[in-house]
Amino acid sequence: MTAKPPLPAFALFDNNLDPGAAGAWLLRELRETLTCRPGDDWQAALRKLEEASRQGAWVAIAASYELGCLIEPRLRPLLRSPDQILLTGWIFEHGEWLDEAACEAWLESRAYQPAGGVGAIRSGITESGYLAHIARIRQYIADGDCYQVNYTFPLEGELFGDPVHLYQALRRAQPVRYGAFIQHAEGCILSRSPELFLERSGDRLSSQPMKGTAPRDSDPAILGASAKDKAENIMIVDLIRNDMGRLAPPGGVRVEDLFRIDPYPTVWQMTSRVVAEPVQADLAAIFSALFPCGSITGAPRIRAMEIIHELEPTERGLYCGALGWLRPGGDFRFSVPIRTVLADSQGRARLNLGSGVVYDSVAEAEWAECHLKGRFLTELPKGLRLIETLRYDPGETPFPFLPEHLERLSASAQWFAYPCDESAVRQTLARVGGETPLRVRLTLGQAGDLQLETAPLSIGAPGANPTIVLSPLHTDSRDPLYRHKTTARQLYDRELARVMAAGHFDAVFVNEKGELTEGARSNIFVEKAGEWLTPPVEAGVLDGVLRRRLIREGRARVTRLTAADLQQADALYMGNGLRGLVRVSLTTAWA
Image (cartoon, rainbow, N blue to C red; front, side, top):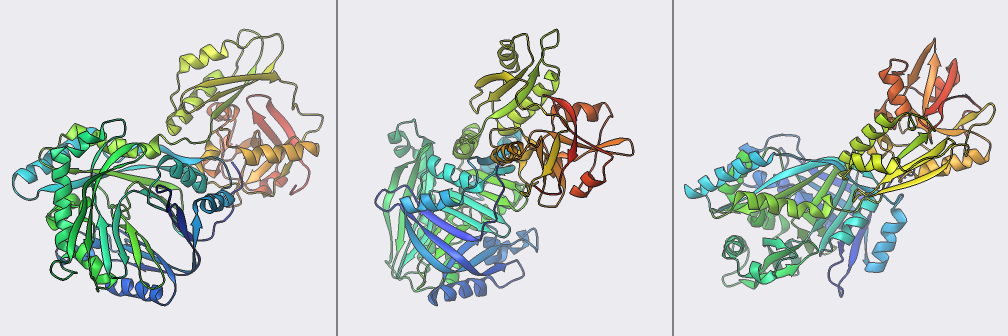
């Protein structure tokens, strides 16, 4: 982990799939943010954003799927919350084109640590609940309510580490034409969408809906010959062709590249392109005719959206809405934001998954297809290993805190979705032996692999009258990495080396709220009136094995502390499972 620098708002729209067109539009120097809620005039909002682009500004737009309920009067009663933001527009002063090398360099210059991802991932619906909903959709189709419904559900988790590093990893894992990374006041958007919703170039309007998915290790000819996937695709092509017919003169709509099969790292995708020209309509009229994209609703659109509202447990938000840019002059490009991670300012993250359901759909196969689509995130390299640092003592109990170490390692492995075999851990530790105490470092990788290192315990031991100092660098309680012991600890390693070189035992940190957290290698215990106090894990604290045991035994109490408590303490102790409790003194307020 590294101290997190503030990131100014920006919007990056990149293509790293096509060698001849790879690069990105970078929008920067935010001038204004415009939002639209259910009670606002959405058409006026879009017209203001379009006018800003015609006046020379670059504009990024994120339109929630539920904006479609505001556009269609019949669907307005389905809006669940009057406070939901349905449309956000960011007006930027500047936009510049970066080639692929410059795009990578720009991202690298803003990455502050080599780890990032989403942990504690959990599905917003059980498999049995999903199967029941698919059965309900098939019944609606049998009853004649609709022909197809695009059903989705969320995966939820916690953003950890550096979102810039995460986006870099997503770019490597999922090359696409319509990527987007937007940093804004309320969080960030990380999108690796392969699907074009709408693109305007002059008076030419085009869309490239995507329907039909197969694993990349399968024969693409099988997907190309699939009657089910072709039926899904042509339904959506017809829907979009009819919608575009409202904007173009008779004969002005055509279909290109019908049933095209495109390769992606983990899947094959079937797409078709629909083109309309000449189109003179403004952005509000275009959205009125085409939003949301038919590929993520079903057909007929309005009835499909009613069924979606009935069965899906939460609002989709930006997922399946529209995400893109307007350039000076008014041309634009919007993706359908699928394969998109949304994170709020507290680090709560969400990724929705879905598929098109027709009467011939097999529910279990649809469930598998959804999770196949999510592999670009769930199997993404996280850039870190889990650590347990154990004390070895010759004798009958060689690892005095082994139960706590195993408990913590298992919990962290589950959080990061790393396989962890306790018997393999025990067998690995059983190889440790010797006649003197040792420092044992065990690490667990993303594939479940174990690595073991040992060193004499005397290295790094506290001297006489050990001292601690406050680090001037703040930690971030919102980053879950602080609650897990991992190799992503650059901040702690660097600060520990610095203060040890000055003769101190440890560096102590406070978080962004001014709360006391921990040392670079120890938990802190403040003694007041005969009671030992230690900060909560919610402040951004590792639940050390010694800390855990002392709390369980009732010898320490968890409470929020500040730097002032260090100066008001009757005594100070730093503690971990390697060296036990070490009484220390605070030398100066800040190092």
